[in-house]
Length: 184
Image (cartoon, rainbow, N blue to C red; front, side, top):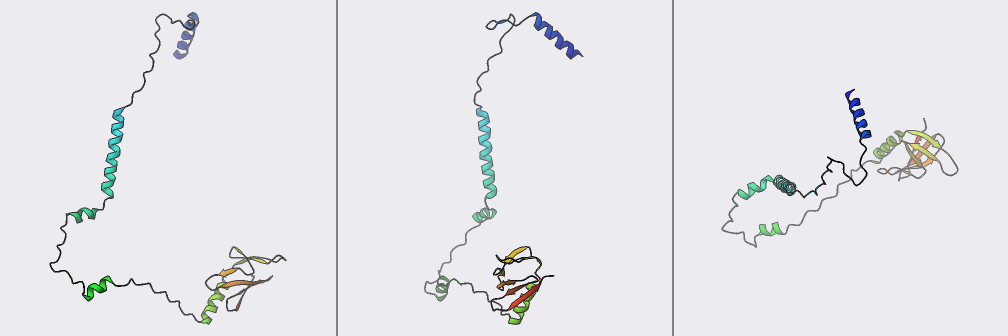
C-alpha cells in the first residue's frame, strides 16, 4: 500500500513542478557524470598470461614419459674394450639377415561333399518373405534383402540366384550344382 502512495505522491510532485525546457538545468540538479573511458587492465592480462604459461608447463611435465627421467639418470653402459671384428660370421649374419616375408595362410582343404553340405545348410537357413514374378524380372525378398536372378548370395561359396519360381528359389554354385529352397 505504501508503494502505491509513494508513486501517487511522486506523480503529484511532477505535475506541480513541470520539467524545465530543454537546454536549462533545474536548480539543485547536477547532470550525471560523463562516463570515463575504460583503461586496459594490465593486471588481468598478466594473470591470463601466467595461467597459460603455467598450464603449458604443467601439461608438458605430464606428457613427458616417466622412463626418460630414469634413463637420463641411469649411468650409460661402458663400451667393451675389444670390439667385435667386422669379418666375423655372427656380425655378418646380423647385419645382412634378410627380413622374413610372411607366409601365405594355407587354405583348408574341404571335401566336395562337406562343401556341398555347407552350401545346402546355407540355403536352408534362408528366410523367404516374398516373391514377385514379372516380365521385367523376378525378384525375391530373402533375409530382408531384395535379390534377382544372378545376384551373389554368399561370396565365400559363390552361391548365386539361378531361378525364382512361384514356390521356390533355386541357387547355383560355381561348379554348377543347384540348391533349392521351397517357400513355406
